[in-house]
Image (tube, rainbow, N blue to C red; front, side, top):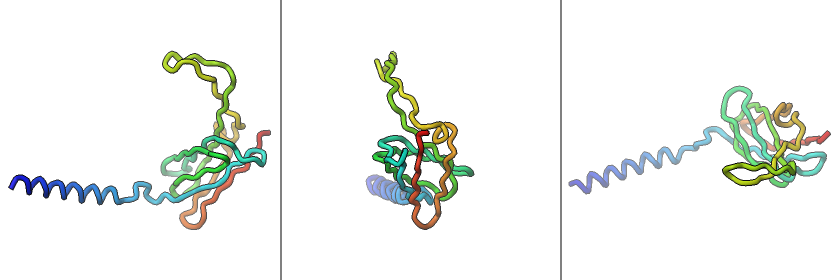
Amino acid sequence: MRPSICAASLVGVALVLLAVGGCDSTGSAIGVSGTVKLDDAPLPEGRITIYPLESGKPAAVDIVDGNYSMNAEPGDYKVEISRMVEKGAAVTDSDYGIDKELVESLPKRYNAASELRMKVAADGENKIDFALESK
């Protein structure tokens, strides 16, 4: 009898895991994608982070060759776009050795003091492009 109790327990655990694992962990998150251009050219690399203006979770993804793609809940967001570049000065870190110092290459109005906003619609296409200017 003992092996059948174990088998029944394992089946029960498997059913619970299937029920939990089968749920969409992103809730009502939907796909959002777009381009990021700097002075009319695709931003080679960077990071886009979105912060909900009301409730929800922030999300962040890398920008590659001027493109990004992420999942987000419907709603209004503050957007920060960042691109770190090497300053050239060597920095010695006791744990990791020598690295180059990184600095933000985009104006603060796109990251630390971002003026960028976006609205993720519950239905329809969520292709949201950003045209940044270095000046």
